[in-house]
Amino acid sequence: METPMSVDAGILNSDLLFLPQDIPSPSGKPAAEKLLGDLFSQWLSLPDAQRMVMALLQEAHGEASPESQSNPSHTSLSLNPALFKEGSTPPLSPRSSQLSPRSQRRLSGPTTSGSPLSKGSDPIREVIPQFYFPKGLPAPNDVYAECLNRVNQIFSGYPDGLPPSAFMPVTKEICKLPSFFSSILFDRLDVNNTGLVTKERLIDYWLNQNMLTADGATRIFSVLRQQDKNYLTQEDLRPVLRELLLTHHGLEFLHDTPEFQDRYAETVIFRIFYHCNKAGNGRLQLREIKRSNLLAALQQVDAEEDINKVLKYFSYEHFYVIYCKFWELDSDHDFLIDKDDLLRYGNHALTYRIVERIFSQVPKKFKSGVEGKMGYEDFVWFILSEEDKTSETSLEYWFKCVDLDSNGVITSNEMRYFYEEQLHRMECMAQEPVLFEDIVCQMCDMIRPKVEGHLTLRDLKNCKLSGNFFNILFNLNKFVAFETRDPFLIRQEREDPTLTEWDRFAHTEYIRLSMEEDGEDAFMDGCAEVLDDAFEF
View 1 (tube, rainbow, N blue to C red):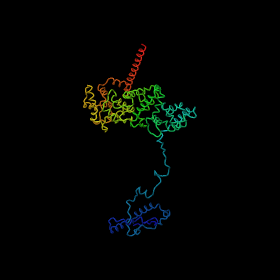
View 2 (view 1 turned 180 degrees about the vertical axis):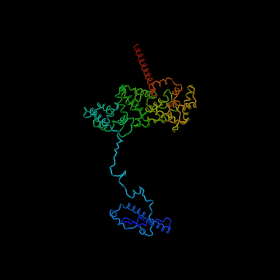
View 3 (view 1 turned 135 degrees about the horizontal axis):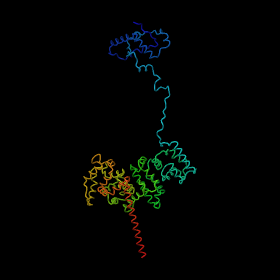
View 4 (view 1 turned 120 degrees about the vertical axis):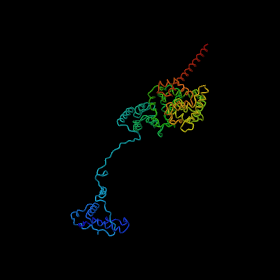
């Protein structure tokens, strides 16, 4: 047998070769523990085992000192069984003579080369461009410089500031707003009421607030809204309508009738909120303006000299029809109408039950402030809903009326409740009645609800003939016209399919009302001529 290998006592730590005393033996018997110790002592006396233990110790404590490498005889300690303490637990034997990569890394310590987290080189910093702009996307430098140059040209002759008479180029060219926004924009800039707007104030309010890149709806909304509000009210639109009445050529004939100017402005504002304010809460949000056609209507009315060609909101003929219809029903001219007045609408076209639902304020709360009375604003909502049952606001208005229990579903019992009065009226007028069972089948085939016998608001919005559904239930005149397929109405629809039902109704009614007014004038002129002849005689 070869001589046991001698090692340096400073390198060899005998405590590493012993197991802790508190570890129990595998079998728990002293005899087995002694046998296990003898076997381990014999294994440790083998030359290969000694070389392996030395290699492990050197890796654990680092490389051997140069002194020990140059003088091998310095290692005088022999690895033999006498080295270990008697009765101690032997150390665990390694499973293999080769170390795993993980063990090698653990014994050799952390390395600094090849690691992705090493500090050998500075990490490359990637600059992320700004993607959130609370005040909007800033304008490109060339656009900003061009606009600033134009501002300098406009203010070149006005070093102290622009007066209202010279402010229009700012409204049209710099802010790109309709011309009738000039007054309200001037007031927004002239915070001190000096009568002048300085160049610095304009640059700070418009250019530095990134309004050059804002869309049209945002520009209009920013100018109209109050500083502490994030929505528009009806009062916010009144200054714009006053300016429009003063400057538009198509409305010059109203300058001598201030009372009709106010009524026209109110009607336009009511129509805007009817179509744009989908929430119906009187607070017009920016997102509602963006989803509507209000911006296009404002631009059209600014470019069009004939106000009646602007069918959206601003047509004077439409206002004339609405106001005259209300005046016809308001028999005592107190600017309020009651149930009996509304029953006369459309030559008694509506049923008592639907009028009762309207005055119960189920579809919309009245703004009149008088119990049991409908004001002018309430009537505008009614007539727009009655004469055009294709809009979403109209469908919601009438759906709430027919949905008696307000559960979001119109059932056959609710339809029968309203149709009973229609059936009775047909019998009184000596018309051939249509049984309810037949009419229900016809309406279901027309609307095709997802659940048979249960009509939801979504079902009605998905059907182009939903207006006929409501006409069948409570408007006898339109029900008869639908059943007879009036060729006059069919021809009107084919002539211009872009017109809405409201546009066609307003056009027809305006012609009728103007003819009646011309007839009254002719009658009055004829009476005057007769009286003159009588006096001459």
